[in-house]
Image 1: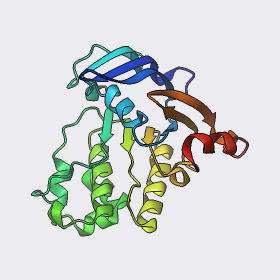
Image 2: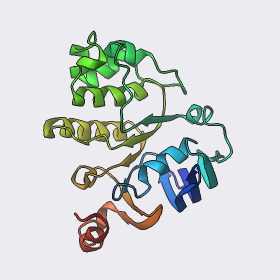
Image 3: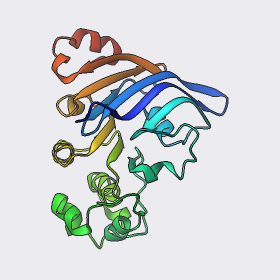
Length: 235
């Protein structure tokens, strides 16, 4: 992990049309870190991810990725800095097979995983390689949504509510995958409603409330600050 943040967000304001949804967000993520954005629904966590990608109507402030300022950059250029986005709705192409979904995304950087590497990580997908997206379970679709961005060569992964609504055995598999990817040097920002999923995985946490950072804490501080966290999250 280097001293210079791989992702640096400073005084970020964001809008959907006339709606001002982000109010001065400050977040830093170092290379190789797993950082979780916590908070209630509507707090601005997903909007922060979308702002990183330039998917809001308007952004002000600073978003630097690997030292490069992106606040005025066109949205199609931002992923080419090595960013992979796994949206909450997963975005699986229903008419394509598992393997066709995997092969579809363009490369944004060198070092993307091969299909066979991905099948070793997600053996369920290997078994369903010829199945159309509509035939996959919710857990398999989530695995495919993550696997697809690993093909692109992205080293900064933005993961939005990947554990939501899934069976415990699948959630455990996703947790193991996060640990594996961290071990491979990926930098990961997770939006999570499921605190129990995020707690053992993330190095640091930002609690987002009303479109700004209400609290920042490290993994080692979780136990001592449980009461403070509960006021924001109800955990």
